[in-house]
Image (cartoon, rainbow, N blue to C red; front, top):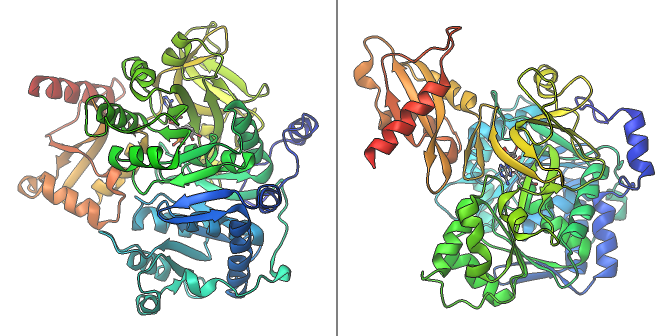
Length: 555
Ligand code: J2J
């Protein structure tokens, strides 16, 4: 495995191969095979564009050829930050065909995150949106690229420019210019299936987001198994409403599961009910994936709202995951949307759980499902690390055929995030029923789950601490009826700088540092001191309670 990664011990790798989980298929070969079997079927729909499997396959080869001529080759990381457009598929499969590694960034990420990804992976190119919009991704990427030392400056590639010719002025190459007339088979390279195929980004709990190295073998196993569990067929029409390279819409079963089955993915430019419910009706969508706040917006829009007139009869399953879906909301799905609910509890590090078709209603509403694989090993432990009695709440630890054994280039962090025998500490507090179904009860990790978007408080605190008027900062979750949680920053001003520290100034400062918008605190409380724990550390528990009380009193 690539340097900086933690391989599975050989006895586990052998077991996973012998069980038929790891088949030696690569992503490049995966698309080739689908293109042969489903050539004329629609692979992806975005706006008024529809690409068949054969067309996607040919595009991937042509772009791979152009990228090869640019000097991108086997093992080269390339940051991919794109909105939900068909080119996402073209770019990532072109990279796979070269043995190059996509590094998946979310559209919301800004220079702080993209810069970190570039530096950690030593990326050879940054592929960003050049479409006109409220934010200039090309300019940001150019700035990030120029921060790399001499000789290591990555290419900036722009996708979707209205006037590709003008991109050169902004210091970027238009994607169009990289599509070779004819594919050159010599440019293509078959990757090692047991090696890293791409990097996902972790939500993170401490410091900067960690990179998650996923192999062809492990990831394609989760994709195939997910497609089976979700009963996908060539008739599946999947609505990609969330940022499409997030682990959930990519692999649970996501667009890759849909490709495995020969179905179609319809890309929604945004997750709003107006956009998505119209697409479900028009494209006869059968499967959609949403985070809880998005699902709730759809429910409200249909339940006597502006989208009540939509014909949603094609929709068979709404998947909800990424954050806890309350039983109250879960109960509304079948009556309002006329489809089944599937709860999904997953993580980019690996383990994914689904409620199943055959589960009774109480299980679908009250649990977050059970694991994909019979070889997913779960341990539920108390604060002392010992297993709790069955059915009791505790922290979930897991290892298995598609759960990583370590983050990329993070040995110190890995020492705490994994047990010595290779279990990943999820930080989630769960209960496991005798049937194996998991209910998420809370978490022990210091993380904020803002409607499915994960925030590492520590990362935001570091940015706040860089403000000259700030003495100390603590970022905590506060309850929110719509997103579940939002972020509140408690800050102590430096003595004498009390007047300089106010919310607008701090928010401007954080935006100026290039932090993704969802990480910018929703509320700022300026205080003279923090409550302390017995050992003198700031008590985040007390801060969470204080802000929850303050919100309750405001209502
Ligand atoms: C409660 N918490 C949940 C759920 C994730 C499928 C679905 C989601 C993700 C994802 C994913 C939850 N109820 N149903 O990668 O393939 C919280 C947990 C978990 C963390 C992982 C997939 N579903 N969570 O959300 O890497 O805290 O993956 O550890 O973004 O989200 O976040 P992420």
